[in-house]
Image (cartoon, rainbow, N blue to C red):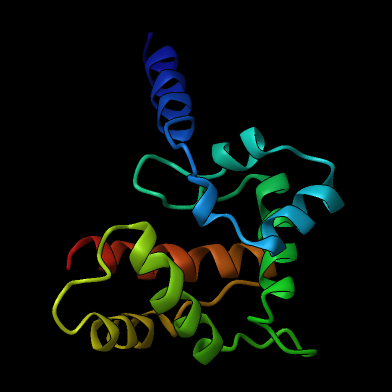
Amino acid sequence: IFLLLITLCLFGHTFEVDIPDSALTPEDYECMSALNIGREQVERFFDGDYLFVLNLPLADKYSECWIKKMNFVNDKNEFNYDKFREYVVRDVLHNLGKQNEADAEYRVRQSIDNCKNINEENLGRLGSKIYNCVVRAIHKF
């Protein structure tokens, strides 16, 4: 029964999100097409708090595709935190309903600075971990 409860928690946690149309970027659609997956699959990559589910091979591929299309990494796969910050301020704050919070842009910058120490060899997982770190901080605004 313990294994059943863990399985139910994992699946329940993984299938909780509806991504609004306004939250999907053209790059999302490009990556869906490139990986031959649909919107429903992408929605399964996020939990109810809009955190990216880690350690799923297809989710890692999707994340890698997306961060490359968004130009969040350079040719050497080094993360561009400035471009990422622009995206977070422009889109993520709005998607999470935090765009009107006091000092939101400053707080995003602080959050990103606090997440710069994340290391990960898998590029897709690196992007997901950085995103999750920042989103967790935004939820605390």
